[in-house]
Image (cartoon, helix red, strand yellow):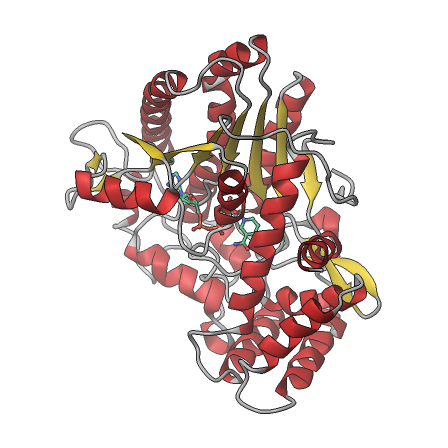
Length: 438
Ligand SMILES: NC(=O)c1ccc[n+]([C@@H]2O[C@H](COP(=O)([O-])OP(=O)(O)OC[C@H]3O[C@@H](n4cnc5c(N)ncnc54)[C@H](O)[C@@H]3O)[C@@H](O)[C@H]2O)c1
């Protein structure tokens, strides 16, 4: 990929209607991106079907949801959930009687982890077991799903899975430093990636955030062929991240959060969509803007580009509604006039040499640095502190707007997708919002 391929037109077509089927491939969390698509599917009157990743017992065994958990999940989703655990990754898999990768990490210490070596043959075996477990469960899910999709219906598969951070104490401490540490708590992401620990984590990210999309496309081949033979259309969407163009000064410019350690998996996800597309399958990765969700809250500073969306709303012919968003944001800050200070801080942030040095698309995902950590995490903490309440941030309001707009854009674009990898930049997000609320 030489440069980002942006979605530049508001997609107009919608083929999805009552009786068609929307399948959410991942669980739905309160603030998650998937809410945007699920809301669109609901409004179109589609039948909604979900999956679960399952739950872990105290001893690590993976189990389906209990009746109570299932009922809560289905009420939240507004649809049926196929109760076969689809936890991806191999961090908790191993041949009986041998340590799982997470247990292997238990031996690493904060003093020695950069030098500690892992047994790669054993890890390869654990990986095979994890992948086989996932694919076996997925075949079961697809068999059930097949019976829930009548002939001739359109089917929308929405992949949302991303993750794979092993629950090992040593890593959680390191992650806190890589993503949240500044000053003498800063930890270089490159040192992490060069260690055996980092290499293991990248493999697990690949399995959870990328390869699951390939497994989904492959395992649903029979459903796809039957639906298409009987007059339906089938499409696949996935959420990518590969930086976003936002309004910096007077121009939209590509920028990114660094170090986005999951970036290698996200590029693999793009390649999976491209390979499927070449076989005539409508699979599209939508590279989405930075927002705050359960999954992204660990990356302190990832939310900074969101503030520029306020300016994009005005720039894209925003009227009274756009002005109302500015006003709502002003009211979340403690002092009158503070929003101007915030916007200036954001402008200054992007004008620094440090941030300019991170504008190299071809070098993505670039490692973090002491300079970046101090600047970005510092700005993030200072801006949060300017709010009346930590539980009601401007970035909460703006994240919800991005979720709404991305849902509408992806839902319609999937009716006649124009390519396997598309960026949803702040310009199209702002235009979508202004149109919907104008
Ligand atoms: N938040 C952002 O700034 C941002 C930006 C661009 C793209 N995305 C992508 O959007 C998608 C949804 O993420 P989100 O930020 O809304 O957070 P989220 O926490 O709401 O969603 C994460 C999803 O990953 C699934 N998941 C987590 N671990 C899993 C595992 N081991 N096996 C299977 N599934 C697993 C969860 O069930 C859930 O569906 C992800 O692909 C994410 O990378 C997020």
